Amino acid sequence: MATNFKYAGISDLTKYFNRVSDFDNKVQIFPTLTSGNLHLFRDSGYVDSLFVNGEELAAAQSTSGAVDSNGEWFYNSDTNQVEYYNSNYSSTTINEQVFESGQDFTTFLNQSLVDASLELHNYLDARYSMPLEKQKQIDIDTAINSATAEYDPIIIKATCYIATANLIRAKEGASEEADYYYSLVTNSERTGLIDKLNDGVYKLSHEVDDKDKNGKIVYRVDTNGSMDLVELAGNYIGEHYDRLKIAISTGGNYGTAKFTVSYLSNDQLEGSTTNPETITGGLQHIHNGLYGRFSGTSAHTSDYFIVEVYGSHRKQTNKSNKTIEMIR
Image 1 (tube, helix red, strand yellow):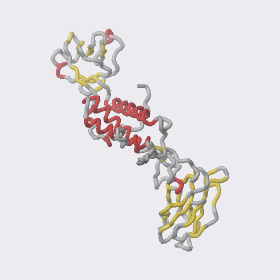
Image 2 (cartoon, helix red, strand yellow):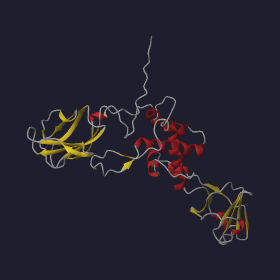
Image 3 (cartoon, rainbow, N blue to C red):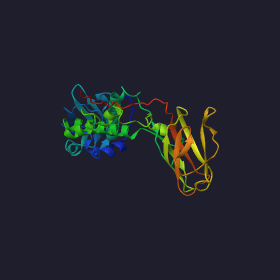
Image 4 (cartoon, helix red, strand yellow):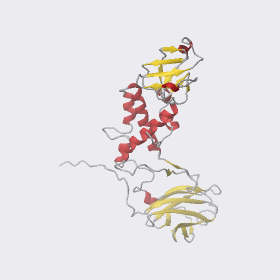
């Protein structure tokens, strides 16, 4: 397959399936005839790449007649045999070497993850625009603009489970273990990861749910003071989307410390700033229907909090498809 698109890497696959190394797709082939320096492997089956004693050889020659230097080889599809040239091996010592056909294991695993990613598309295409985009996940210690965009962990995990099931079935055929891993993605009871995404039970990080109007803290700098923003509540009635900067403008304890809020205005995030408000320690109004509570003993003027919030009028995405049984 020409595409190299994938949602997960080999390190992810190993994390969710630690027996990956057991599923190398190489198959050992055996020499059947030596004629001078040319060694034949009859009835070898299709050979894409050839390995000798674990080392992958260069690509095959384009014709049988071109196999005339040490290490060169050619797979003849008409006779279903491999022709391999090496003057260092006799008809005896050739049998002491290990010859394998197959793909480089890293290439093989990457292709398995590509296949699994495209298979995942088939399951999610009715719900989401494909392919899914990387999102900046919450990293409370990294400024949102500096955070690295990543795929949602649930997408990485589902891709790895599909790849695992495919790897097991390719080697072992029908398998309860393969069925188990696949059932973690989708099953008839609709309890798999993708079932719950399609049914709106699980949400991806870019989706809007009924809690996003309450806001979420995505970054904080509070290392200089001992007061933290610990709770958010309410229904934000501002923009469809805003990223508020709640900054300490006056240090101190409750009743003394003050904060300001920078919000979307003048065609830019943090384009305007509110007048200072006193920190009470109670659940107090922050901005446009959003409430918050500070907790601690002393706020510092270098501290601030970034809150991501969606307006309460913003339409939810991927609502749950739950049904209610009605009995007459």
